[in-house]
Image (cartoon, rainbow, N blue to C red; front, side, top):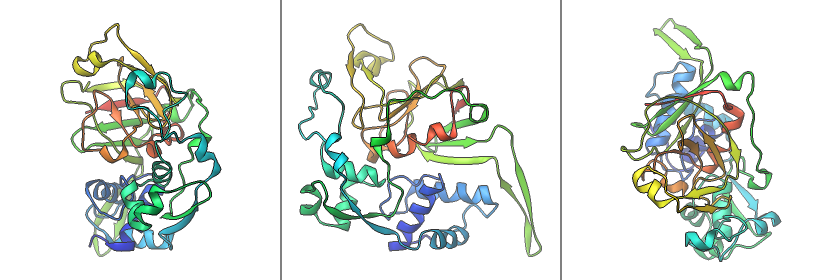
Length: 310
């Protein structure tokens, strides 16, 4: 059965740390958690709809689903409570920072502010300051302070891999260059096949139907903390205008903390300023991931790899 309570959080953490993204860690087993379980089962050769093996693995790997976290001093460099919502004013900002310490801490631990409030309290989260302690999901922290604006180059192995963007399931699946399968013999059940070429799965939001560019493309670049060119005409029609604004990099930049441009101009995989909207609202043409997921891409894929949008 689907787990509930602490076991649900434990499972989401296990899937997240295994690069089978369940979406926001909040103890709610929704569509993305189900898809992540099915993909994990596919990799290991278990029946796709089985919850037994993955729950056993999660309990073993994540004995404690919660941890105490300290608001780090570096948060002061990444939080700007006065960040404007107006695009023209944003062009003058040093960076697109978090708008609150609660937002900083929720993204750091792959969750959202409402779940941090549920684990702590509303006054606690809305009044957070440096060196305060709170309860968080026991997941490896997304440390935005480690991002430098790096541009990632091709890699002999990672550039040979490929990704499949499924715009129906709202999922990106990453594979080894060569297909690998293992037949698992079971004397008490039919033989099963483990898809060992599957490396990772993450939730996405695809572009609006009229802007989706189906086909097989190549990743051209991968850049941390990208500057975003805001062009309302491009967002509305898919065609560039001469009236664009440059929005500085940062976690609240609409393309998030990493841009992976494809060989189809104007299309790429990128992060987001609103992880809670992944899988719900459509982007203007690109493939959007949570920031804590998109930052893993350079360790899984590099420029030169193929990206199929279907």
